[in-house]
Image 1: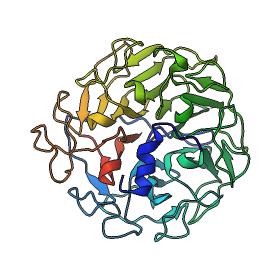
Image 2: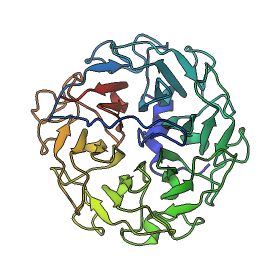
Image 3: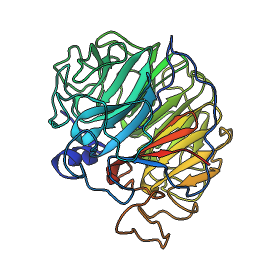
Length: 408
């Protein structure tokens, strides 16, 4: 299997200690729309709950041993179907909690991708996974981007129980294959997935594109309807073989839509692309760029207008949130951006926009020995965020934990 440069950090998760959650899970057809509640955030605010560790100072993979409360390289955490779902990437499983955990270190209710809480082996079948990264709940189903198996798994009507079997997969013709490829029915290292407004999107990182299905897909190997980042559904060149532009991508890892706007974390171009109306043609150019002053610029940056390997995006139609991985922070736009390089309003993980060290609670420009409730570690550009009403869930990948941010 061909692996893009983006794959290397994820492979290291499995082989040593060491990636949307990208990428949003909105309500699907038949799902009730929750009332809008904004996420009220302030700079450097602490998280209220930590999962995967016994305290905010913990960061060891599977602290205390592999069980129902441990995590190793977690990425996406989303609410859906009355549960919290967590992609426990390095343990090759998805954990689910009943309701919204309010106690630190709370054990999961069940597991998908493994037979029990004591197993973590990768696999390629209807009941196993190999580095699940992003999650979405749409049309009463659970979708999981199974990164190293080059597929997106589709699970039956919620709720599902331990060891549930997928009923179909996007990117493969069956549930026992992991072939990569570039066409409307193939994927190469998919990361972020999102469903919103009747549209289903996948950040197909290894093919440097975002695929779009009109409606939540349910059929095995169902071909995509539209592509962004490439001129056709059969192309896969980084930045379309030219300098970065409004219509090209390099290893996109996060995607969000509300069915009108589309936002993509164009990770290796150090930027976020925004379509202000839903695209209708293959390779359609973005309308706005964040993190860079122009569409041609890809220079890593910081401050309120710069980014360094942004890995995930999430929103609620009013606010936009970007996990700015290699700056070890989460950026919040309190009103949805409408101009190129619009500055962020709030920063989490740092006390100011100019600071960028990981796990730096005392803000002295150097990493501390342990993390805290206020700090993040996105080394390698892997940090994930997902909004759910007034709560923000952050997959703090390198600290092997999931943080719950409740806002002010």
